[in-house]
Image (cartoon, rainbow, N blue to C red; front, side, top):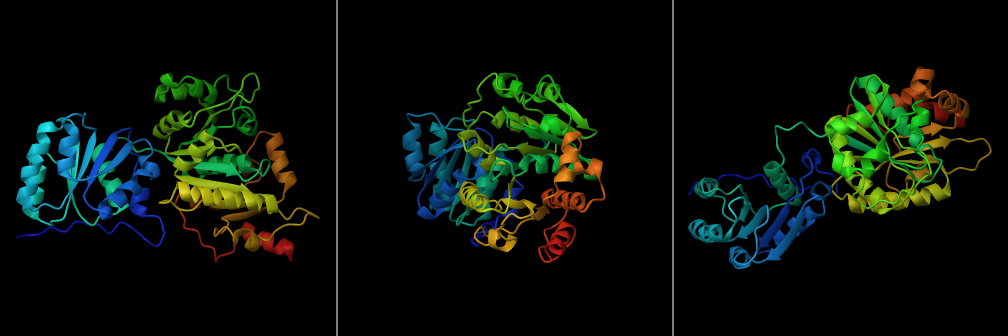
Length: 422
């Protein structure tokens, strides 16, 4: 009997994020039912249901193989995808699947998780209309990858990458950092960047970019049925050649209470419109901010070196690690460091309980930031050779994946901060 090797080595049990998994696009809103004969297969499928790429899909796991599926579907409609584990030998498996076909909707996709690494079986299954055959043992990454490969159109335009910025406390400068990094990314890499200001009552992006658009993100959120790329484009304000803004109204003429999914469609549409979407998330903990942070491709937390910030950052890091178990830990930027006469927590003491090394330590420079804010300009437009601007450029490279983080190398702002302390 010939054999074929299937790669089931994606899972990284050390806790490091799976790079192949991170590259996958989100699975659409589909219904999935899995029928498992062993816990070894049921467990990774359950874990897959908790991955952010599967957030829109509805997945239910049943214990029991083909026989259980046949019994269920005699009186129930079949979902978009059926996952079947079977320990049957090849010929018996083929025969059992013919019985399943009699009760399955012909439009339903089927994935078989088998225990025989056999070329003949694989060919027969594909010939009979099975979408994919995977040999056990399987990992969570295998399941997400197989589902994504079936339901995500490989010829469709890729989704843009989203980076969510959130402050550990109000007033720590998260929005300012988000806006300046968005500007740096658009100018450095000549790539389209879209900034979405999600702080509808108090957002500052319109002020920081000196814009006063008549429409913005509120129109999109309150009219989700109208959202598509064309409508979204009408709501955007052009801040620079390759930088667009979905501005917040920054008014208090209404309350802004939202459901968990309120911003999901706006963000999905934005990601189809630009290769990079910067989400300026307000310092709130609601169902929609939780959902937004959980589903972003990258999360950046801004904090000042104080005790309350440390507590809040620890809570955010721990919670996001649970919400995003298969992604990298949130990134950390320490802002407004070295304020005169203010007792501060050192960077080492701040990062040690978090298990996260800061990407950058930005010193307190009120004149630089104040002049830029009062003029509606970005730091790079005001003083492009300033060390802080160079650090923003370095951060732009790191967050877009163009440069790896090198913690041992002290350059730019880190060196400047060190000299000031001495």
